Length: 395
Ligand SMILES: Nc1ncnc2c1ncn2[C@@H]1O[C@H](COP(=O)(O)OP(=O)(O)O)[C@@H](O)[C@H]1O
Ligand code: SF4
Ligand SMILES: [Mg+2]
Image (cartoon, rainbow, N blue to C red; front, side):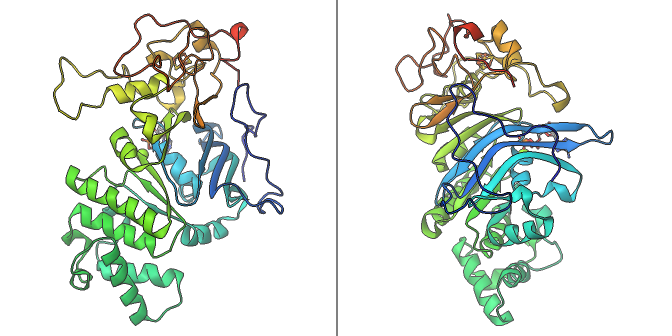
């Protein structure tokens, strides 16, 4: 593994303490059952540029997924969701040199310490992925039946006839009617929704414990989107498969996930239950995302609020709080020091001391005075300066 000087650090002020450190690298934690199916600790990912300089796309992410859970990652385009997802299974290393630091623990075993050959086994056996564009993942000149059969045989030593029966069963399980007949179709003959179902069937062939789905419904119409999300939730319930669902669409993650991680410019800025996501978002970025969702009625008086500006490129990451150039509450202290991660009621986290109520006058999410997308605070109190508390900590 290649490091670039960003090693695990001590917990910051106000931060939710990490679980006990694992044992030897690449080995499960000694005698202690791992607390989580997947746990990212202080995970950083950088592209190594030609000059040798790292270009960091994922910054100090802590995230957990437990067996049987559906966990979401949401954020605008360019926030690092796909780089994070692909780095968990180290897919990007096949394309270009990457630098990692921190830990990616699967059952307490650090995947960053595994040789790439062993990583292929993990991808085959434990973690499966589906992407936004099934066409680019499917072989256009091979029937879908043959591709699912191949996926089954890649992970189980079964006869061709048994693999075919298993493939048909998988296609039925993901809701493909007349699966027998459809097995002879080519990917180009199927609709986008059907192709995504085929991809999910191929992922299921591995019997993974964790499915990472990166924008699996983004290219689909709303009805098909709903069906695919329902399918993911059903597979989660019936097969106990954990799902890490990545989307730019807050509505998508809210409707399917148990917990949601909000990502901005490479960082997780808020971790919140799906239940509280719309009603009591704590971080100004999450509030901005929530406020920009059209109401269910479709009726909007005036312009729908939107977050000003755009996600900057990795070469122009702002100092201090990364969201400060776009934050309506930004103060001088925000532009100087990166905010610490504050615990929220119910096990959540918010990387903004002001929103977490750590500063004088700040509102605690989940209370009636919490900042809400529906009621942007006009007279906002100043974010805390270092002397006022630990709202900002340098990194
Ligand atoms: N191969 C690459 N080389 C350099 N930068 C990249 C590469 N892929 C993605 N990025 C950059 O990493 C950041 C995060 O991208 P990405 O993870 O695709 O965002 P998201 O999935 O949230 O839309 C973006 O600034 C993007 O331009
Ligand atoms: S730390 Fe400051 S700039 Fe960043 S989100 Fe909080 S209030 Fe806004
Ligand atoms: Mg993406």
